[in-house]
Image (cartoon, rainbow, N blue to C red):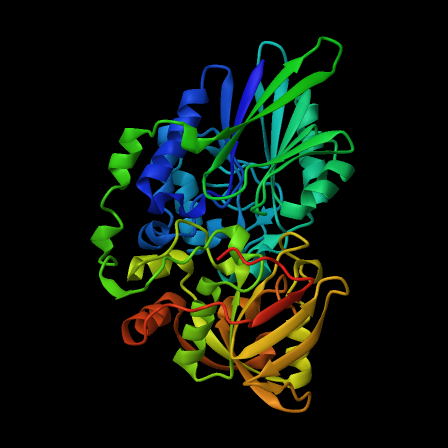
Length: 464
């Protein structure tokens, strides 16, 4: 028998040493001679500590849990390909990557040890591992634009065939494709998909192939037991483990303690009355206090007509407040990206707002709400999936008028979210996102109420 211990998208877990310790404690408690520890990308970034150490904090985690395999998520490139190569060379796991190529057209980080596939021989059988990354990573992450992300299904099929030729009887796809996992299972000769990218948990079968995702931020680890029946078939039994149920790995906790404080980000900038929830359930459901506060800060910092923050850019974690520190604000939007000003017509603005729900978006779950707004009110019909009312500054949007939007540079760069908002709309650039939030918190405060900026019909119950 072989057991696989699977995590992914642990991202900002390192900002809370106790939470990181419980994740590591869960993995090490389950580990053994018959187990392999497998990540599925976005494990080095983003987060406050990640920003300070440029992803290097993950090296301590890899050593603590005895990581065996990982693949590249879009956030592995947050600090540029040179830094990614450094982390690959210094880290414990074997990096499997079949569809990422460097600036010269060579397999990315091949010189540092990354390979398209690997095999593990067990007494009963031989297991192959193949890694693939979302081909849209170049549009998701500006730091990855010089790299090439090829068709993951063609790349996976070739790597799987090579692994099987080398003796693999059972092949595991370590996937950072998110919703593309279904097509991976349908098109490729794979036996199990250990996925990431999308932050919703998953335990389903597609064409008989189990697909597992643990969600984000280190709350869940999947244990997958594999056993051969002697006739060429395999029993696959997944077990879900909540890391909160495990004692922390104290050595990892000790290694992380004080590292955020030493960065000088723990000064209190302001105090709010009630903490603000930033869980995915709240942020992706529609209007919420923390989304309003961020969008207000963008509009205040730029003088724009509208502030726009995408839900996926607000990282989940413990509630923020009542004391608000710079570290809190970095943890909300832990990206070294500038706020930009975009100028659009009213007609273009309506198109942008018309892609605010997940079904219209190339990322996330179908019912997710993606836009947090300031200066604009939107009434959305969930049944018809369209905007039925929209006003800026209390006045209906004029299709022929010009409006300015303050948002992150990412949204102009990415084709995954609000694809009609592009670089051609750029009209100005301002400070780094979390720096603007800190200045706003210091000078104005950092709080907001739910005011009916986003009205969804039928009504969605607010959770914050």
